[in-house]
Image (cartoon, rainbow, N blue to C red; front, side, top):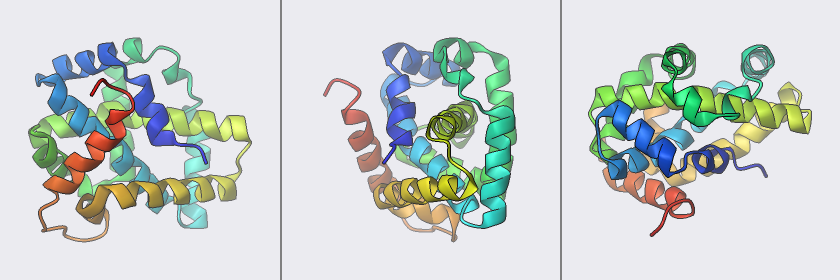
Amino acid sequence: MNDIAGMVIGMLGSGEMDQLSSQLGVDSASTQKAVGAAVPMLLSALGKNAASPQGAAALLGALRRDHDGSVLDNVSTALSSGSLGQDGAGILGHVLGSKQKKVAAGIGQASGLTGASSGQLLALLAPLVLGSLGKTQREDGLDATGLASLLSGQRAQANAGLGGLAGLLDMDGDGDITDDVVKLGSKLLGGFFGR
């Protein structure tokens, strides 16, 4: 199975992490923890949205129209462009809807970022996640059903690691999610950064 989360996180080397940290005004360790939680959270939300045939078809249309994977050609340049965050803010409105602030607050609680910084990070990561998904869709020739199936697997994988944070997409999520998210972030990032 394709590992979209691993693909996105793998593109964020130390230079890109430093860029993100600088843009957010936080330290690199906090940024890494937040990225480790934010990427699977975005994939889980996309999987939830694509669970219906209409949702999968709408996502496929968006990927074909706007997310061909070219954003991945130079991630560092994309991160420094002002348009990435603007595009991401629009994506988050569709993907997370009214849960956006709650999800950002949860990621912030787990990583030490403020809710505003977490929201900014989510906006910067959303186009990269969709770019990775669009690239995979093209390379594998996925139709709406295939895309939904891929995201179902990604969502199950993300939810297993996200623990309580995954609940923010479906319920009030009033439990303490900090430990689950920090563990997930460390596990995901362990393969990409020195231990």
